[in-house]
Length: 393
Image (cartoon, rainbow, N blue to C red; front, side, top):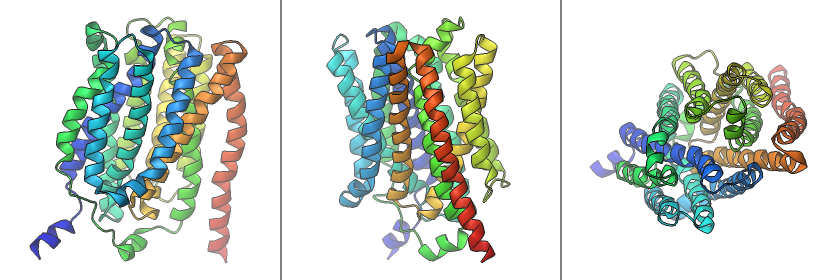
């Protein structure tokens, strides 16, 4: 009897946040360091970087879709622990075999799959058994923990690189061991989510907003992952040298400030303007990053881009988990949309790059983004119109 009462409680926030922090430091080190390592150690061209990023995004999307099935078949905590252990092992491959490109590609692919399985399950632990203000508070803590955590590696990588550039990836292996220890504090599986309490906490616009923000989320990651592989080259083009990783992290800092503001305020709940404002900020910031002729212009673009990413991500995660009743499948769908965007973005950049260099990569991505924006606008406006008609009827 006593054991059943303990199981019915939501997962301890301390264990969730510890897992989130170390897992995010690890992920930040791997994803941020990967393209600098490939460019400077393996001498990848921007095209090869974009192909690598697109491949990782595709694997990530598929793994996210499957995460719910995996968590239904095996104890979710065991899945998380196994994934962290495997990710830690493969992250050390480039350190052990620094001249082997297959080791690098293998590490990148396995890291994409394992991380994509981890986060939908963690997100289910965050929200399961929590409703309304409690869920929003837990999601707020989750967001303000993982965002600065992903930026930490950008500031320590210059020191780590003195051991060898591949240690920028090997750092992931070390930190994942800490994430593994933190995940031991999670219960065997997320608590059952009370359907009636979940429905009572839903606002009248939430289902339509969940569909709408899904479009914006995919668009934002199309753009985000088109930027990541070419950002080192854009920084060099405006004269940013040894501090490039710190400048690249400015958009993450802006995203964190946005998350914090959304966590501490309630004006955006159930409102359509958040998704629209986020989409505009992402697109304008992206254009500024690609077209900037100075460090100031690039910095302003990065900050605006980070604000937009924050608005879209926070809203999409909240509505997805609220409407999806905190199931792993809800987080899996959310992460799969990120993975889809992470695949499409680099593919667009790759096509442009093949046409004639980084400038064409940016132009191609901007051109196709215009088409995606039209589709996204339909995806945003369509649910809004449907919801309004339902209210009027």
